[in-house]
Image (cartoon, rainbow, N blue to C red; front, side, top):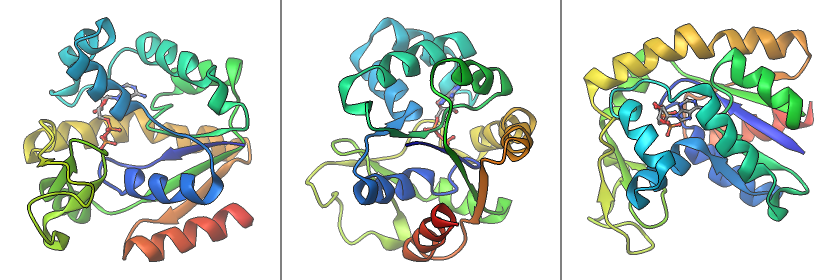
Length: 205
Ligand code: ADP
């Protein structure tokens, strides 16, 4: 089963994706994580991504589509995967239809105020990639021992660009998948567990 997660920046996609892949036992493919890792590893994909990511702009469709296609062709994806952060434009959705049409598209929604609060308080583990909000942090480190850092694009200013791009380029995807009967929208407000329960229910409907 191929599941897609869509939703505005910092709606909690990464957090919910982590829980969902454990529940369904499929790999979690986050394009944001792939790009951040490529930047760290200084690969050619990372070099291309660096020009866009810290400004809050999207990397070109062909670049990200090639990376996703390659990742989905790996053995661990043969029973499905959870795609988080792709597709993000209609062109990407059309490309995906050609090589791996999704079964369900989960849309996690939250309002602007909440998103801004989440993005400016977000801390990410440099080892396992989990993210936390400063209000819920118990110590200086992640449970796994990794160090917590602030993503370069998690500033109020870059957030505006990301949200603007989301509304302009990614929102039309909802209509695209609604027409195909694949869209399930859940509210991203409330605790992690509340949101997760909504997701499980939406998947069963
Ligand atoms: P968020 O959902 O919080 O904005 P992500 O970690 O999913 O964060 O993505 C971070 C950045 O990576 C995006 O702002 C964009 O520059 C780039 N990116 C990730 N996925 C895609 C994609 N499908 N198409 C283009 N750019 C992408």
